[in-house]
Image (cartoon, rainbow, N blue to C red):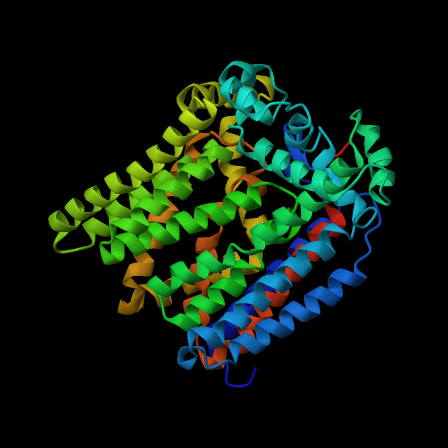
Length: 486
């Protein structure tokens, strides 16, 4: 790293110390969370870390190569294979990590099937008639098991769709699917061979959909910062331990959908174009069909519009444009649910009311988690699952961002992101598991860090941050139980 400046060397040292300190914390068996209320349990199953280590080596090698490309002079056609390779290696790293604990290929399916880890797949097995099931969802949601009763039906229907597709592809008694189905019956369900295949396929499909999130993140950053810094952002976003470790969690689908919503919204606002605003409304509605937690993204967009208008001299004219685009986005949002109502009889307002009521009951009454403890713990847990080296790099980059006039648009975006995060934390609506639930809020950390690392003499520091990030994910996989299937 010859030629690296003094500030960059300080970042390297701080990131290395943070990574080593967290490693000692995990090796000491100390809990992550609040004992007596909720913690990420310690993993007691031996982990096979050789395949993940090989995947880490490939990913770091790609980061090293990408940092040395003349990205600014490359055409779109020349860039596309590299972005495809980035997504592919993120996916390979996800697969290697999820297979590192338990029985490879079979254990990921057990995460999907297990009613304890996620109730959605088990619930999808009860659907006989989709139209009737969706039309009556606002009546039945209150009686559903935990997780499902706090969410709209989108995730359950996702699994239903995968099951239907596998039913065409996998005849009954087909090996090895029939053997997997027998094993999955330990959960008290009666999955068919096709169901077993669907469970395994779902785990890896969700991982792939999550890996694709770096594409809209890259496209968003192209609108905010130089193209090469946007590329570095996409690489850093691919190192989030939450993305790499929770690869069987439907929250990864939300990550990609919310990143797409933010990208389309910003394109609409930057270029005053109604079509991206309309499409953003459609994608946002689809996100809300999966989880009402994306309400935070709506707050994020409002704050982005407000902060953006305040920071502009022509704020009144800009506010008017934002209002028109917001109405266009709301039209797209409304159209999604109007179509669902007439096609399937879905009642979004009634479902939202029931789900939010159930969420409040579970968080405050059933689990009785203390408000102020989680207001303090949530940012800590979020930092861990975003990666401590990346968090330190983002904080380290703040002086550079403030001094650079070309970062004005990015700074506006980051200010809105920070305000949204603080307000969401203070609301007390989420108390625990934010490493999973708030995955969609972690991208701005990569966006903050990348521009300050976008210098030839800081390429080595950038690659080192990538290495520290993926090694932290590897260590977390070996020492933390990410899914409780039994």
